[in-house]
Image 1 (cartoon, rainbow, N blue to C red):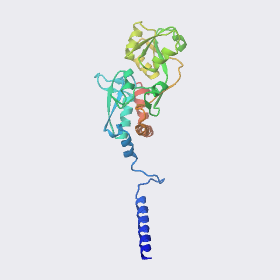
Image 2: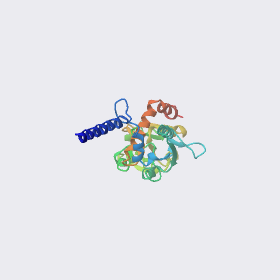
Image 3: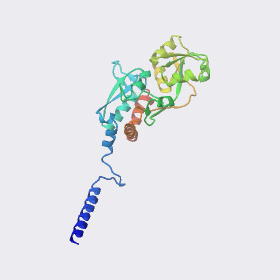
Image 4: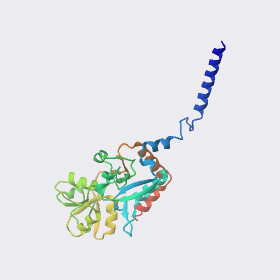
Length: 272
């Protein structure tokens, strides 16, 4: 009988200890466990374990990314946005400038992630994952100021069209515009210069960039082409859900605290 009482006493003590330790776990107001989420995410994402995140871009796409007058320092809406996101994540951001058509292949190798006015599409989703959308764009057409023959996308049929290699404009000109001759350029500005020199009939590129390039190059104008909207997002390594969640969380915070709107006004809406 005494042995039985001792056994019962031990069981009661063990039960009490289990209850106490269970109660020691941190919980939020909804009773969910917290405090380990960030460390767990870092453990499942090699990139989140780093202090510096290397970000690929192509600084030939104003107002989203371009080089300052020193010819070295990248600036623009995307650059400011990714730095703000990095700050929310407690990470330093290092920008790596490269050719646009090399960006996706560099993710997970030369760079960790990329932001470069990248449109989310099915083909790219085979290579990388994307964050939540941060900007909605549409293609526009740059033509000579005195050109009245091109007034819509329909008028591009049979024309010689300049595009930046690997961009959505490249895909549309190649696949959707009947009879078009497509000239591909590493830099969008080179296409605009060829337009002014009469080597091509038009340049097809995202609207905000078309306006920025046209404003900087007299003798050109922008035509709205009635193209379908496209969505920009940050390109991420395939399958890194912890990184994706962390970046989406930071992006949401940047939008909620007003930083996003400030950057939008500075780089895009003001025409800087």
